[in-house]
Image (cartoon, rainbow, N blue to C red; front, side, top):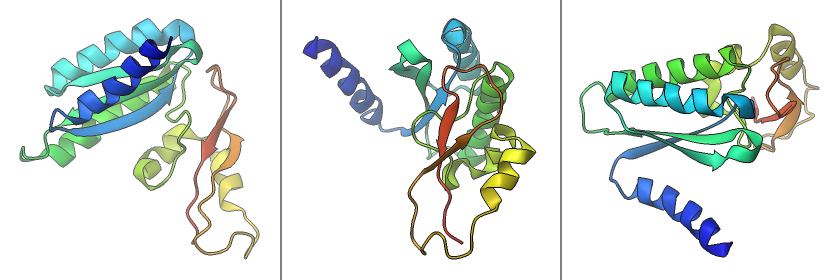
Amino acid sequence: MESIWQLRREFSYALRDTGLVKLNENIVVPRGRLEELLGFTGKLQKKHNMPVACFGHAGDGNIHVNVMLDDQIKGHEKKRVAVLDELFAWVVAHDGVITGEHGIGIAKQRWWPLAASAEVRALASRREPGARPQGDHEPREIPLGTGKANRKWATLQFNSV
């Protein structure tokens, strides 16, 4: 069993060792949609001519979708945003959530309106003044909509203002 875990750990290192920038997007989809997700990421890879590698916690639908980016190519930033826009839109449209275990922080701030309902966003913005000391970036848990993903809660990281 340890050899299987070692293989899983080495997979992530092997991606990093390609020399490409590894955008590890941790998403969750219902287990019954894993095959569709893999098919979609294959199409995404071909469309944008960027390697995409998926691995993770398939037993609970939590998958690490790794978009591999060559940051030496002109326009890579626009391409990165386009790929992630499509990935996250697909995930949400298929009853998933755009974060599994790592939360929504600065890196996924652009997709916060896609990921959370207006009610959830309003709840997140209502915090007691002074309730979180400056620099407190501990994750907090709140519900992320009504998706049918296996996780009813996702950790959201809010930065102090």
